[in-house]
Length: 398
Image 1 (tube, rainbow, N blue to C red):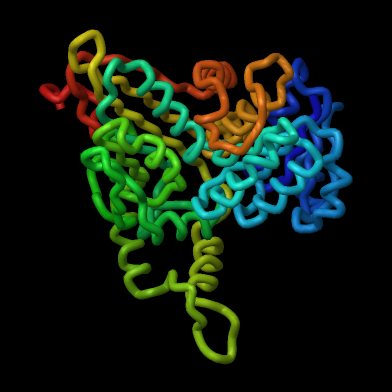
Image 2 (image 1 turned 90 degrees about the horizontal axis):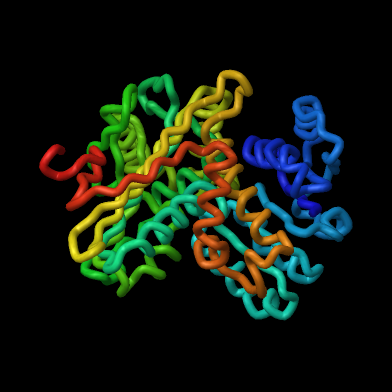
């Protein structure tokens, strides 16, 4: 099959490199990006005969049209606001489309393409990265194994291996996406009913294996509202929180409390907003190359075989010193690739067409098996009774 990747930034480059290793499934990998230097770097890193690159702006749909024709699937790794137009182009051309998602309003615009996609028998699938994406599949796959599912607690975050004060944080992908998550409310379930929760609220301590014993989790938007809506009326409790080093939350509460994320012009003589300046400063001070880890825990409660049980998924990916690939690159790229391969394959794994989020489209077991086979170290453990979210240990041991 032929896969086209749009965007050769850190995540797009990782998607492209991993795709080039799937020569049994993929006969050609295309990648396009505005910057020739990013494309050249990819070729320097990837000695793969299946790789072809094109210098093109994702906003120039006339050029993108010519590049993606004949593709079995397009994977978008560009800023979310570009995805609806790219998705429409793919529907027009009859090409499967998936992206990394993360913005609820934009995702809803893509899901509105459902009827047109059905007519073309192709799929438009947003939210195919880490979160939203992988964590959604783990949640739905796990809940399906209970006789009576009751609660789902999702925790995930990317953190630097060497945190530097005052923020104890680095930007792995998009400063704008971080601010969206930190300023927009999240949707949780309480008593089976959708509830709006303020971002940066609900702080809790959470522990992983060393050196991540003393982490902190708190509410963020996270792009998971479609999951909360799907689970409404099905389980009693659903919440999701972002994991960071201690100290980060208080620093961001201070910065945002000053109004520095407001989308309001600084003055009449400039078009810049406070948010524009903050995004630029975050990129300057918190961007760049660094060693990282991705921490994930999904704790699911319910009844199984007539008794209370808990299923725990856990993952702690770290920076790869051999390949110099970050944990965030790998944890986002591998789910995106698994999504594209399952959607584009002609083996009947995914049939029909339409627009839907990842967990509603792909076979959950096949997706889980594929991401594990590609190297994500996800553990799956059952416990009798209930397990503490903070420690992943039975309540009486927590």
